[in-house]
Image 1: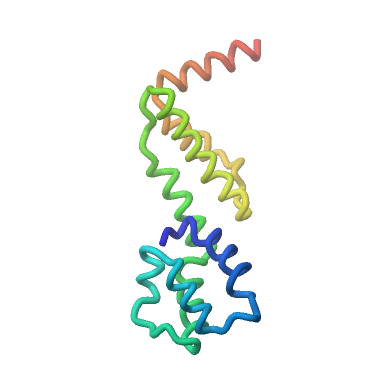
Image 2: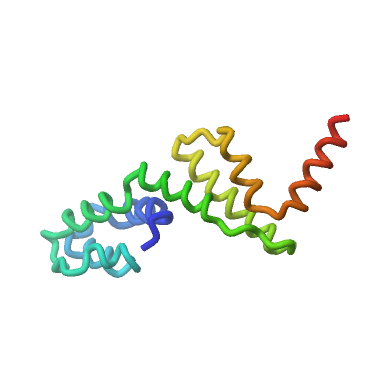
Length: 143
């Protein structure tokens, strides 16, 4: 049900279920309904789980969750709305991992992650003391 995970879900589903010619559309729509959760499951609720409706369900899901521009926007929003890390190693690591995940996803979708806005966003997610220490160590390394 998470738009950020739909692309991965759909690639797996497409490979293992959707493209299998030995499965009927009735079997496919039942598998689809079984594996969906949250908003994705709600998206196809009310559609009778019969073979004739499989292509309709797929179309609804891919239109709603598979829109690349919407997905890119969501990754940007997740980055900008990310909470500032606390001054604990685990919090700093989690924040860095989350930032890297979104940047990798954006890059995989063709976004230029070398834009000047990214360092500003990234710095804003860490305590000032940490940023100052990093900048100080970079300055020392350059002299």
